Image (tube, rainbow, N blue to C red; front, side, top):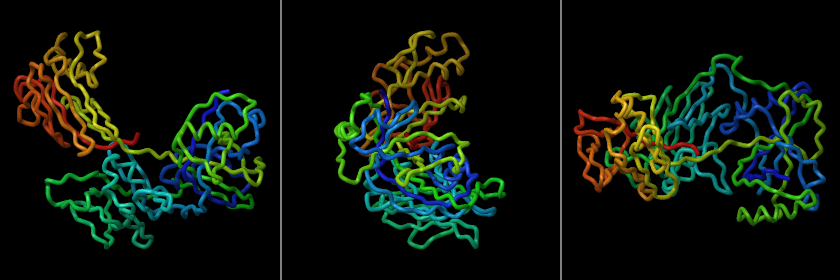
Length: 430
């Protein structure tokens, strides 16, 4: 039997009193509206499993899974529902968008076993930068009377909002702001220092009650757990195996310590139309939703300036990396060694059948240096077509550092080019 298993490193427990007609789908959408990292249309039914039970005892069906909770839940309360006139704040970098949803106060920082945050900076910050970020970095709070979001610096991380350096006093935010984070020993006003991350903060006003999901209050008590899931595995297990053996094997595979605090649960998705009144939950059973937490990787975007809809994304992880950029040998023959094949860009620019041959097959490489969190471009030694970064011709074998807004041109001169690419350096959830 094949079944997927995950480990949840953290979880929170909510207790609600709801009406009989409440449906699971509406409850899931309400959670999605309230929680910054939940986006789901239904919930799972969680049933605890004992180590001595065997696989054949719990009737695992297609779509079911196992979740190991590595720590007991912490009790929490959902924020008050949004009202017309309230403002939702969104943090945006690249393709990553995190919304406050229904929360009126957001702590941004790095979580640890003793501290939870509302927005994990790992969503935006590349791995090599984390040591330079304060555990508690920034607090965003919504003032009900003025209907305004405020920002307040908490740690030692230097913070610019719209080029104004934040101190310990809170400041009001407008409809759109730019947030930049710098190391504690860097001077943000000095252009020699680049921010670790640059985000947009956008506030949007809730227009009507039709946009808001409200829960019908009642007498049915419901316990909901929300977990942060990490490691996963797909298991091939015999129906006669005891779950204690499954847990031991998973712990070994994932290199985890399993002490007396863990809990193994059997998860089954509930149909969204299921009414709470039709569920009979045992005292130790609960409803469950996973947070869709994802973390930033380092991304270099090369955008075709002759067709801005076309872009090439190069992703680097926490280690040094390099990517090769060039063009295929023949129109119908792709080159698997290329990380970026500029065939489409070259063909559109030239408009001739062999237009893609206007540059070298292996034109240049880009390098990611993890220790510096920087990207560099370097023309290949054997490339016969010149490479320019902005207006400067790059020498073969000599790397040139790239920054957002740089323009890379390939061609005989800067003006007489066959490909022109704009550089954007950002982070992306992965």
